[in-house]
Image (cartoon, rainbow, N blue to C red; front, side):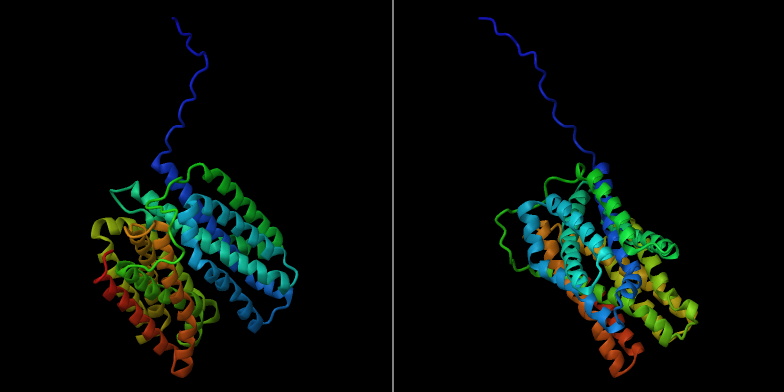
Length: 392
């Protein structure tokens, strides 16, 4: 019996996505997330003035963001393990953009506070998911690390957002219209990148419980992140105060320390992949801790404009590589999924970022800001010490 072949052509399988396309897609989302956060930061003074919020009131309101982040720390990794990093990332970034839009159009603090909480929730969900994607992309590049370049794009976005914010403020454009533009850019980038994200994560376990005790290696990585983020938090919150009160810089130079730190941190992140490929992640983290400590001690011992600037440049280079390399190592955990491991390390590190600045203020009040910066320098040395004992 003769059989008649079907005239319908079989649907060809979708062509595989190149690793370069995966890398570009994940890098785009790192940049867009940095743009989202830094756009908000650039317009805080405008929103404060429009809503008539006092300095003390603003400080209290800004706590809503870390509250939102803390709410999702226990479940972000679990969600990534259950739903996959791609789904959580797409939803988290869309929610992040929507929260930014809400911040721009809020007309009173009762509207602003829930938007700030949502901003923190979505930021943390997107952060764990995008770093899980980055770990997966890095596995496609066995010849050299790529995690640092992703975090470098996040830092680069901060400079772009600052420049755009300056333009918007100079032309008296309201935050709502400014944030609408950013939201549209984010959604367009999200739509363009969605098809090129990794669809499967390394080590996914759909039955992963919400709370999993990290092993000794992950606890060590978390401790490194904790110490490093104390140093970062000190630079973000106290660099301007240090230049004003200790360095006694001219008014036009008060922000120079923060700018110097941010510049070298961004540059260091772009160069950290090459350096880690040459020296190994452990050696780079050890050197990073020493650079951080040396920069801070230089600024403390000789608090003149030139030496303090040099010190803050060194701190930027020192802190640049630590978190990307720690996240990269955590994502390779063999005891839990990449998302859960990243969430565990991120939780410990985030506590350092939250606790560091107020502790610095307490120590400065009890003694001096220079003494508190010496304690931060010790955290840099702790990064080096712990890295010597932990598998990185």
